[in-house]
Image (cartoon, rainbow, N blue to C red; front, side, top):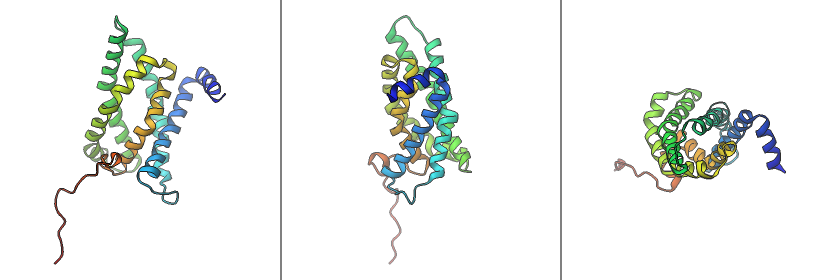
Length: 193
């Protein structure tokens, strides 16, 4: 019943539906980061941070991903299905992923009143490295099995965990704590005698 309602909205207004879905699921990723990873509790939950993720998901990533998947579907077509899938993954991960990780981090820095350059220097490499451990495989499945009109939704569902990671990384985590691999201090603290 809910899926049929969603399908009707998707058919009638695909860009709007996918953008709203993306906004909600980006916010869900942030809520997950704050509550399950950072264990902030309801009282210390940063609603502004969740709002930034909602805004970015709905206004930037949702429309961009919707348009991007259409472009890949129309323009990256080779003679065999497997070659087409491999080419789409390569183009997606070679162009879209590095660009949108940079746009995400820069957008968050601007919305937070900070420096995009500093945010990129601090987090870009970690985020891009983590991206390459997950997204090529996700996109392979996406391009092979998921119809075009559901690709953004598929990415958004997987992105709940990914956005949890990005939100945590953006908020000051190194990105490794989210996976239980806490960074060790590089030097020993000075002890008082």
